Length: 124
Image (cartoon, rainbow, N blue to C red; front, top):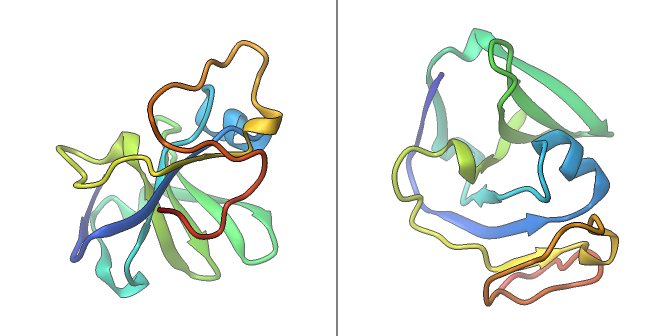
């Protein structure tokens, strides 16, 4: 699986809700949005991506072979990428921890990014 992003990432965040914990098999997700859906191009392996819709118009893309969560979709376009699957430095850091009000009891959120009980629409 390979993709290319022609542009910078924005709004990097870590979500601690129960759905993200399950989708990412961990304490939280690490996700950043694309500046534009047109900036994302599958270079190889697009046929190996399977999608799971979490709600109307929204979903996640997974590798059929290894199960890695690769990207998020809005309607038919890639909306953002999971930072754990980016090779090299993604050029962005987590700007906020969201849904910490529903984090797992064993999760200890670290780092200096602000924490929000629920969803924070505008990230620093």
